[in-house]
Amino acid sequence: MKHRCEWCGEDELYQQYHDTEWGVPNYSDRHLFEMLILEGAQAGLSWITVLKKRAHYQKVFDGFDANKIAQYNEQKISQLLDDPGIIRNKLKVNSTITNARLFLELQAKNSSFSDYIWQFVDGQPKINHWKALSDIPVSTKESDQMSKELKKKGFKFIGSTICYAYMQAVGMVNDHTIDCFRHQELL
Image (cartoon, rainbow, N blue to C red; front, side, top):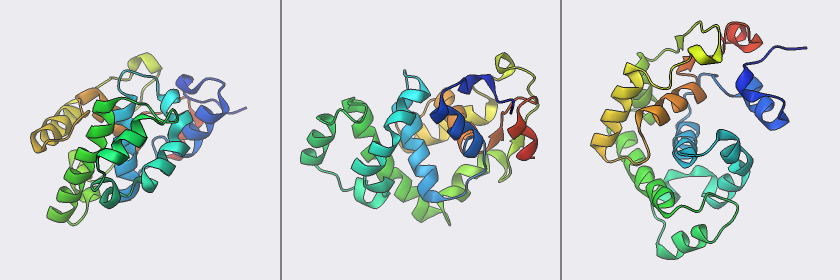
């Protein structure tokens, strides 16, 4: 029996996400954009709520194609707000469009969004050695800086706590506890 981080509990979807994706360094612009949007959607909710809706998000948000999302109009926004398969919060839906446009701007100004976002950890995952879930911070100086810079550029739903959860999700930090089998695998 594999020992996992305690946050994923016994839920199979959570365990699969934990075992295959969470904490794995990812440099794909499309994936990094998707996770930025999903972490923002999660604000005020549990991650499992978003994870259960993820496949539907991928469908109705055009596979997280930022070029398409940046073009969404009022009709598309109304469709999204009527869709029970996503979190129907007008501010969050509108922030997805805003963030898509800003994401494209950053992509154009840098060689990639990945290069821009990974600069906050000098391009390499930060390896932590937490003994317990209670040891893991909700934000760090790196997530504070990321949040500050992204807010300055106009991004929404991008506070420091969201940024840190994002950093964990895309592998910018390895926050698997040291007794978790994934901690060692991701070194």
